[in-house]
Image (tube, each protein chain N blue to C red):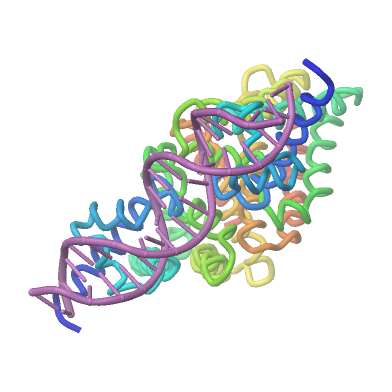
Length: 188
Length: 188
DNA sequence: GTCTATACCGAGATAGAC
DNA sequence: GTCTATCTCGGTATAGAC
């Protein structure tokens, strides 16, 4: 596989990811994506047999992002610090979350309805980060209820993102992050 | 306005609402909707000038549902009972929520991206129920932080719905509802 | 291997018969 | 007022030139 190919493929996937986040995956036509990526329209099919396949590549790209994020978090020494750092990152992205919703939640919900292979794959966008959160709680001494705690933290994250998006109000995130941190302190 | 007209219009709106919930509003074509409602396809434009107008009618129909729900809740004597009844209703609908997501959250998020009049109107799907929740907290003695509490309760609702949908797991709702009830007890 | 031209289909929307 | 037939456009996907 030559360099030019990978470059174009990468550009297509990342552009598709960007447009899917801004406008939705279904609303973004292959022409839109190709143009924005500076790739000839028909040429898309050299890299992806169908649009669905491009969708899977977008999910894979998001999963890579998540793994990179986890790797960064894991450099912190304690699980407690890692969980707080995660919540801090939510607040740091409050503007983006309020303007366009959660990139994971939005994509997951949209692809879920699409059905087929995409629906199944989209669930990984949740399992991947939630698994990591659960590990942190376990490492912090919560062997028995790690899953429950992880579910709660992740739900809180998705909830504040969805509502902040609905109202286009980043301040809601600040409010909820405050509560969420208080909650973490009570369990850790 | 004759009886036949209202009947067909009502049928169209309710069918559109059902399909929008199951498959998404954009993915549901006017032909799909008209067929499912047993109305000739071209005839849709007698009732709605554009598809967007039909979308607004769908939102209005959801708002009516919400108001009917509020009226029912308001028959209970105390705000505390009303809030618990609200949370109970979430749990009662856990199967539907896990299978198709939250009807309000899903519609709100989808129409939000659509832009235009629909984006603005879709926000009412959140303001309407959140306003009611806030009233309950205020009536229960929380004058100062009623909004914050309402935001938290509503975020928790949307969060558990989004995550339960992502995993297609109604049990997540049971877990979170339990926590949510505990939380209400601590503030009321 | 890369890209142009185009086929094909289904969408929203309209004209006009009845 | 109600419905049929159709128009137009934009989407995915493909055929084939270079």
